[in-house]
Amino acid sequence: MLISQGHTMSELLSHVRGPSYCIRSENVKCMADCSSFVSNIGNSTDASKTDTRVISFPSLPLKTTTRMIMQRLHLESSGSGVQCYKRGHRVIVGASPSTEDATIATAPLTKEDLVAYLASGCKTKEKWRIGTENEKFGFEIKTLRPMKYEQIADLLNGIAERFDWEKIMEGDNVIGLKQGKQSISLEPGGQFELSGAPLETLHQTCAEVNSHLYEVKAVAEEMGIGFLGIGFHPKWGVKDIPVMPKVNLDFSSEVDMIRKFRAGLALQPIATALFANSPFTEGKPNGYLSMRSQVWTDYDNNRTGMLPFVFDDSFGFEQYVDYALDVPMYFIYRKKKYIDCSGLSFRDFMSGKLSPIPGELPTLNDWENHLATIYPEVRLKRYLEMRGADGGPWSSLCALPAFWVGILYDEVSLQSVLDITSDWTPEERQMLRNKVPKSGLKTPFRDGLLRHVAEEVVKLAKGGLERRGFKESGFLNEVAEVVRTGVTPAEKLLEMYHGKWGGQSVDPVFVELLY
Image (cartoon, rainbow, N blue to C red):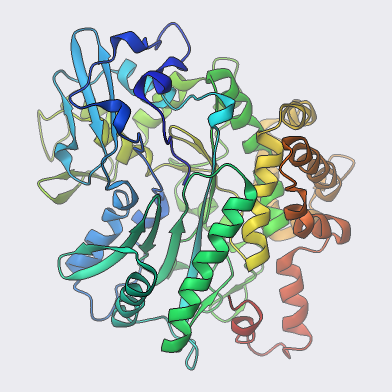
């Protein structure tokens, strides 16, 4: 995931804008030398990992499996990150180790503090970075069955020993790896997820992915394990699989955040169509080109969706905080235990009215954890997280960040997208989100098809990449071919299923999309 990296506190806070949450760098006071730390609160957290509809590993204790799901919210931020700022005469320090004691507040948090937390993500353009995540479904090559935990542990240990990764343990069980600013996490469905470092160019992000896949394959092949490049598992049931790779991008100010948020939300259905590759569930066609998008559509309207209020004139950091305050909570982390707070709101917590811990008040770590359990198509933390596209084959892992970087990191492309989408109604945006998972680029839209809009958007993304000057436009070849033909990756898989696969089994996909 993309996080704020390499800034002194003065640099980080000097870019916060707006009279209601302006933080002056000269007021910063820390319990440590902030300039020597990396501010990485919120690194690589994925809300889908808290879905309770997951499988347990047969030989892994249920308690550990449950802890593993929640630990995912802390895993990649277990370093020495510190965020701090001064509110009046009260000092708030936020660090990222996975303990409830990592954040120390000498006074109750206020709504102003929560707004300031989001606003502290602002950074100047030269410090914008690209962060990616990707999940891979591991399976036994001979049986096509999901890996057992013993196999996963052997794989993690093998990668750690051969390629010099640091192990992350849960008791005696290895549940992840760290190496520099990268991390590998273990998912409850048996997936491996790479959370990449914040990098400057698409060449760097693609090289990172290639290196990671080489390392995983080098160890996995010796064990008879393969990994599948698809956004939703073709044989396991919906109830068993939490998924979603993401692209995460920076903003320079509240105004820049708003523009990127709106463009990102409007274009999520197009991204879903371009990268749709999940037409199978439980061993047969499921009627969707993108099963992942349908899962989120059906999941929980309180914490998912297209967020129409983002397009209101009043939208900004404060309005997102108001939204998040009322999204039902999942849990809090206290004394190395996860306490169920289902149905209660963070607003209740702010008032000391959280019934499992009456009278106790939240910390910034609690706020960070809560933000990670909200799953709209674009998610705001101290960066913007694009969530609308499925994972897929090796080539698309580089194409997805290229699509978003070309649009959101170039002013000409960004403004052009905002002009194109400015008169789209909330009903039209929701219609696209609802229909695209089934009909892809063939979705009717106004006087044509979504494909026609996608053609224009991909051209804008290519132009944006060319203007960046890093010779990155070639990474868009994958999606350029999709819009040229109008055939999505999912539709190609369906053609093979009904054609050379014989229409009887989806098992050939394990060969077709093997990493």
